[in-house]
Image (cartoon, rainbow, N blue to C red; front, top):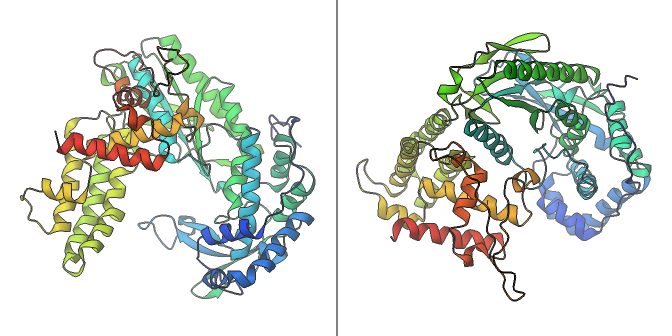
Length: 546
């Protein structure tokens, strides 16, 4: 078997060779918190399992623990019904590649997977086996934390008069092409999984089958020889384990990267005035991407160069000095995009102004506001609030920490959306004053919502409830007094920047600066709930009471 396929397959000092048997109380909590959608293969619908849980719990616990003791997954738990799901509503429904093959699995099989996933995750966390720059399916991680790290790096490159070449790699059907033998090898030699747990994973991956359900009719049963089920609990975690060597491969070239599930972005910053430096950076990037493509090929993953996107980001004066028409990816010259590109759901533009992202938010929010407005007469006030919160406010708040320091006109546009939302809820006319209603709704304005999000992330980072790559962006300042009786509130060092600075918009600069101005009683809050409550009151008074 190819050595490249098992890149960095080394012996590990730690080992996991036994499962922890679960108690009825542990299983009750897992089942109670599990989503309720049922599968056509379930003998009982999930809601009924939860309703009769007191009677069924001893039997379910025995089934789960028998599997954990024996290392065998019941055959009925390895059957799936695939419900093809259109990837986007505007795609052609007659084209098969536009569908995602989501596996509908028995409810109790997912309960068993949750038990194993929790123990595997705990083992990997305790032994620091996760890829630190993989942000999917991990506690305290999200697309927003991933983008904060990339956004922060790009802004600091701009601060140093540099430009950043960002490559967004696209994988074709990544979950469906995983080789089971390679995955077992990763578990054993990269993670140190042995004994019963390794036997269990072999059983989990072997003899799986599925059939497709369309318009009430089943296809014939097919064996799952490759891949992990999309829609399973363990699938995303196993995929992250499968691509563990990828991070080290990219870092060997001195490049930056971030991974979110099967979305991988590789980037490098360079001074545009150094012709030799640019050539070296581009050569290094293309060599790395060639090695990535070779690694993926030998690991049965397909890098799709046609859907891979390349963008050069910097401020205008530096971009005009930088001439890079394309980057070679997997033997294909991928042109550098001049239009904004979508990165984990957020629009990045070449100047990092975030104007394209704000435009996208406003377009989507207005679409939903128009629908809510038409239905407003039939809705109670509470129903209207819920609709606005679900369809509009959630979009205004999504990844809003990336809007630090953007042009005031963009904030004004977003604020107008919030004001329109309030007018619809309280049934006011277009040009009526709405300030008193915003106060009654207890809504923070857009600028304060951004500040709230950033300060919450700083609080979480200080209390070790954030990814390590977020915590690493903050540096605690040593207290001036060292008396034993003196306990100071956390204070962070604010990085030095130029008078007019791109870095002022970065999390690593804006976060500490705003945090240090907070009253100590807020910074010293003992829980996140208390901190959020105190912070909202503080920001609310800052806007409406001053």
